[in-house]
Length: 303
Image (cartoon, rainbow, N blue to C red; front, top):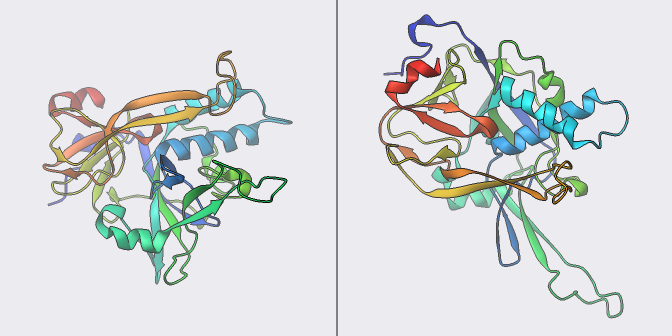
């Protein structure tokens, strides 16, 4: 039995669109460092998509150099207020449809098919040998599967508030995601025009969308998995791992940390994607694509 959506026939404040991005170069979705290895997350986070959209929208609206971080901050707030998104996951094309692969289901096979790495080092100018401490290896989501050479796509959903003024569709055609962008990594293109979701089903029905609230709501049936980082609370009926979610931003107005990536933002302690939900639960999507569970006694206030 499918969960109810659009409770009480409320007017839709948010519209959901399915988005397919073609991955054109390696994509490093920053995660953690183990020894010399910079590991990648096996998906695109909401923070990454927010940052890429904010950058592209700001530059599209600015004539000349866009070097003032306050402009990015203003556009970023508009993105927070009028757009929301799921995480995006590696996807392969099958006939006329797209099949998404979940890293928590595929395990080692997922990594074998989708995750690669690139090693490099600096050289000493005299002896042309590796400079001490410079060897490093960076993981990436590969633009083609490593076993069969198939084109890799990224599938997810963008939620638009009905009064959204942002031309996000145009921005999607010129995005660059993740780290190592100076080397040409993270290039994506819009595979086709975003398709509005009419029946509320996300990713084929493993989650459902309700757009009648102040923020987009996601209903996850029992025994299905969280698809984004979710604020960890004691009352949340789930089974999975938690981690602190931290990101970096550019805030040139901060005199102590004025350069790109120096400002560290702590979001919350969160359950990771792939955590199993023990009973049907409703979540609202917050900034950066984070989820927060809505208790039944608070659902009415979130509408």
